[in-house]
Length: 484
Image 1 (cartoon, rainbow, N blue to C red):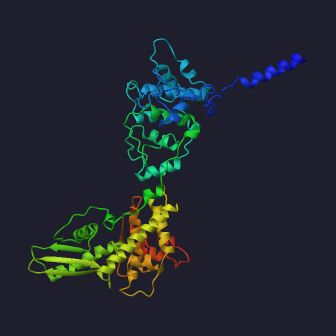
Image 2: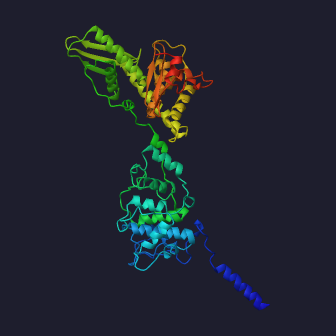
Image 3: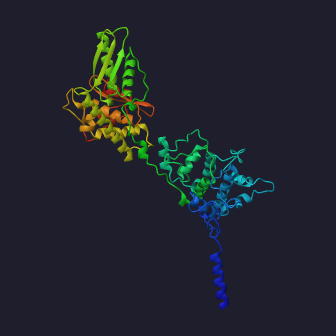
């Protein structure tokens, strides 16, 4: 009986000390070896080293033994062949629980050190021959991304940061040195989405053409095998989309040229756009052939019409001074029954208020990078209709005719509605202008490449509801409601 008990105890002891069989193709095989605790095995990697945790993990997972001189070589460059070797070890560890068994099956006499690892990765579908001829060259960070992003199947390396990275990249302000023309750009983005990389600075710069150091490579490698080491970029997307700092001149998207003596409505429109782009409210012209009363009337009518097409700028009146002898004409734009000093204050308030609305809608998540221009325009349509009431008491000289009144008093008439709406659209980078007839004005906006008519005035159901009949109308639909 005693011998039987001893035998049973020995059997249980063997069960406890014999390692469990590795699973096939499992992240459960990524286990740090109990007998490989890192304790300054590499003379150049101390607890104070920037990549200490990564190099220690690389050692403990059995993926490196360092260099023959007893260092890890934190600042040494890495060849493509060395990246291949590390990647093959990770894939083999994932597949079988043994970092070397994958390459061992392909090793034959006379092979270069990296070749069996490469053959193994090719057999696993990780690589083909796209890196041929580069194996002894320094690995670019682009090439590293290509190898590492494909080392494990996507199920083993989930894209935990997918939404954040996708939205940030869409702004053009993050990972901005990676474009669709960058070699392996989709693989680079995959590393960000999986938390293997967060870039080299606050905006996630990747430096795809640069070579990589062994320390930086160790960080990427260990984030692949150890989920606890993966990172989430600390990016504030609201800051990326903020319109703070936008000037009135920034809202003129073209680069209009100045024409000293405009002769057509199109040229006068260009001069008005030039004036607005330069933050001015006066336009000086010179007609060397002389001027006439008819020309003055034409200039006032057509430049004022042009200014009203930019009704977000709050100009709806024009005065003129001129000299018959010199042919000089100066047009000064303002708002009806409003002094220049007052209008300057009103414009400043209008722009800052619109910027605040724009930023608040982004910060609240009501507008996101994945939305189409039409979807964004609808959010602003909703905001206008929900935050303004039609001013039935407005006279010809009321402030309700400019966007200021909508933001300040929450009342407006059609040109105030349209000016405020166009201002918000332009802060979003959406091209638009004001279309008018004798008694009404509304928006024409280019949304996702198509022109639509949008009438926020008629869309406002007096606060009770928003009428989408007048949102994103075709020209034919708009014509059926108001001719022009």
